[in-house]
Amino acid sequence: MPICRRKVTVIGAGNVGATTAQRIAEAGIADVYLIDVVEGLPQGKALDLAEAGPLAHHDQSIVGTNDYADTTESDIVVVTAGLARQPGMSRDDLLLKNAGIVRSVVQQAVHYSPGAILVVVTNPLDAMVHVALEVSGFPRERVIGMAGVLDSSRFRSFIAQDLGVSATDVSAFVLGGHGDTMVPLPRFSTVAGIPLPELMKPERIEELVQRTRTGGAEIVALLKSGSAFYAPASSVLHMVDSILSDRKRVLTCAVLLRGEYGIDGLVIGVPTVLGASGVERIIEVALTAEEKAALMASAGSVRGLVETMHNAPA
Ligand code: TXD
Image 1 (cartoon, rainbow, N blue to C red):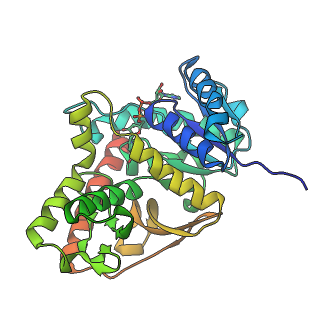
Image 2: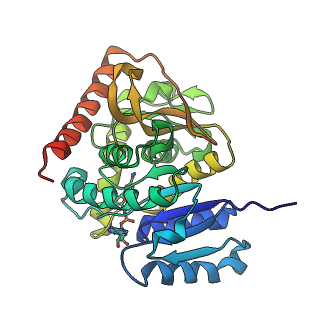
């Protein structure tokens, strides 16, 4: 029987990229090609990861390279290349620098993998998905931003810690852009099916919502250099696994909306069904006036970034 190994390219061999490569290889779901602009970095990390293979009980190949030709015919290309936030720096400060990096790496990657699904991680996330869409010319189903899975996981972990329950029994729903205006939705967040408002006082819920919104900055402030990467890499693994295994998991992803949620032509985080062809469906739920206003405010801040990029001198 022919064996068809799946191929995932991870662009950027930094904290998120290398940890993502490790998680994908250890899950045994694909061979991983790690690529970076820095010579030796992806090769060194890939070699180290490959040498852990026998101990981690996987036989995936992990290749480090600086040459996009090696990434030919990848099933999925994960884009983590870019600069990470430093303390006091907002995601938006990164905008123009990372737009240039994402433009260049996507251009090269899609040349060799025209049928791939792009999973974008670089910040500011929603704006970078716009860049990847424009440069690749791919349909929106195949250009997907990772943020909602991470934001939901942060909210879930805070709820679980607060209530003293297993994090695996907590399900949470976060809509909107990946920024301080993201929209965690407590009434759609549950503990073993029990809506959160039945279990927690509104003031406490609001505190956890606020902590979720600033969850990335909390880690940046602690690390003092660099930003979160373990939970981000786990989030990418969830998305990659749902696509490669056609699991059709319902995951919040940043995707180009065409009228859904009353938003047109803008990338924003919404619940999606992720399967073999990428985003297979966008799930729409009715929002209260307050939730809708919060989503529109979040969309407004993404729109501002996109306009800044379009108005910037080339
Ligand atoms: O929720 C989310 N979407 C995020 C996003 C969660 C965590 C991190 N998020 C963002 O991902 C973060 O703000 C950054 O924009 C990216 C990557 O974060 P990471 O922590 O991995 O940054 P590193 O460790 O600095 O790694 C970036 C790597 C580094 O090795 C650079 O040499 C490389 O990117 N890089 C490039 N690779 C290829 N090609 C080019 N042009 C290039 N430029 C930099």
